[in-house]
Length: 171
Image (cartoon, rainbow, N blue to C red; front, side, top):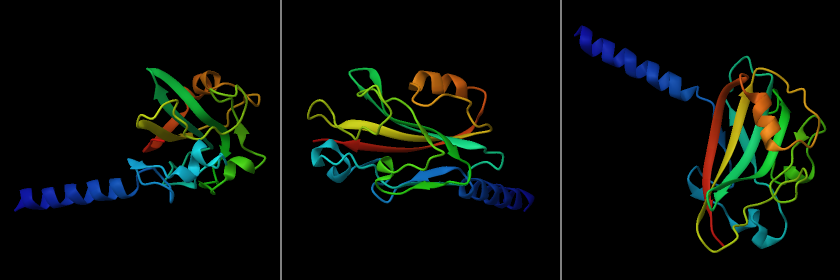
């Protein structure tokens, strides 16, 4: 009987832990789903999808959001946002065109400047993409428009948790 009670309590603990885990979601695409063409270069709008995250650690001071993919074994960063305020837990559809002033945008792989680059594979193959939001215990003391390497280096030792949203896209 004690074993049964211990198992039940253990399962309840696991469920509570999972229910409170840091998550990143979107109304545009499910985790491991296919991103609609609306949010790609195919539509010519370069519009970012809605993103929201919840259950960040209580010590969170800021967030970093990165969109990346891999082309031909090279990591490609399509969107880099840092110093997202801790009280901000979502970005609406099209946020890339009207970011709040507190958020700093880093350089992406393509333009070498701060901007959002939508999924736009260089070929017709199915490609995998990942949005990652990092909860940090600090606000990064960084200049605007830095490249992702400098942002990631400064984040080291300050990451409390991360949440990811994986998706695919194909022309």
